[in-house]
Image (cartoon, rainbow, N blue to C red; front, side):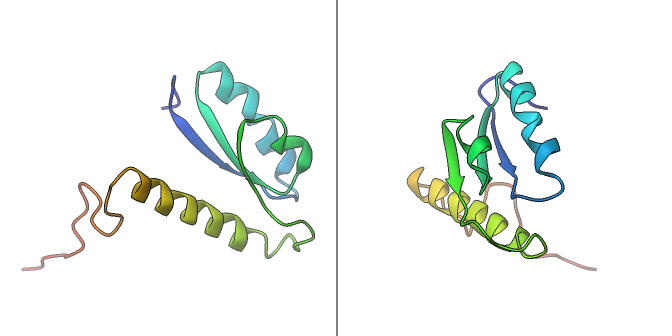
Length: 99
């Protein structure tokens, strides 16, 4: 599914999975994707043009919270910048009808 011009959000806080996630960046670039990295790892952040810098020193067990929150805020403000209504995404029906 990764292809030319496709943005890819890579959540990569410091911890056990950082090395594996960092190794994805060259593959994403090779496929023409544009990675947005959300991380506190300085070496990884310098490899990409688009990044969101997380604060350092967050315990690994807590790191998913600020990482995902940063991604959600980025998605919200991207939608707003594009003039989209994040409360009414295309193709999503918030009402489930049952019979």
